[in-house]
Image (cartoon, rainbow, N blue to C red; front, side):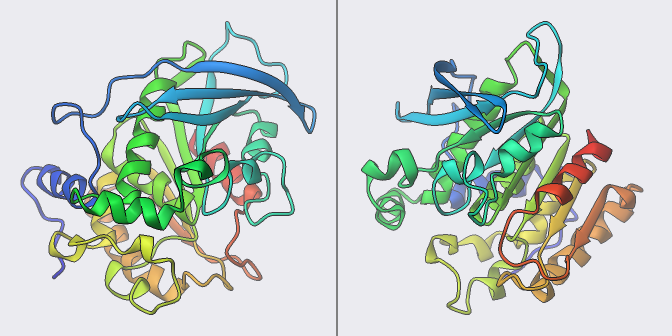
Length: 303
């Protein structure tokens, strides 16, 4: 079953259903209040200052993260800010591992003048001690939730916390990521209104086809999602804000699947009179990876 995004309530009903099927943990039916960011050790990465952070999520779990400061950072200035979410793998791939498929993208964006926050996903990197993410997914499903619901909640908590940082320009906040990071970028932008621009790479497709061919991790298969909507409905929640979807020519998240959802998303943006606020790219020779310069170019125009 798929749905049309023609809702009298501008998608509020679909949003609540989306929250329910993913198992996003709300605070009395609302997005989470801002947790305190705890700052830890500092280091230099590629000439930039990077500080370890933690914040408490819905269940009290301490979620590790890192903040990367642009050159010349001063606390009395306000900076356009990007939340860069990690795909499958460790957060450190976004920080100090340019050889990885995430190409140290968080540091790359900070080099372009952005204040950047990153977050570890449950079951990976510094949170590998929690167990494999598929085991965490199975446990979450006992309560009608999902691993994706849990990490989306973590991401929303981070978004709330960052929104309270005095040197963050609240009018210029973006999200970005590839693979699971792309999913989190899309979901955080869709579920909250703090995000001005979303960069989604290596994820756009359709729930019905993309995740039924056996080539993707089964954590993507959200129980009951097709009973409430399709991926384009999620993208439509971001409208009229700016969004760029990128599925590389050689990505196993096929551009053909992305085009199906994108056509619906583009139609909705056009109906709102803001068709210039959304685009889909398929860079030649690009596989399942984070295209830092493409993301930087997008944010340079959007933030």
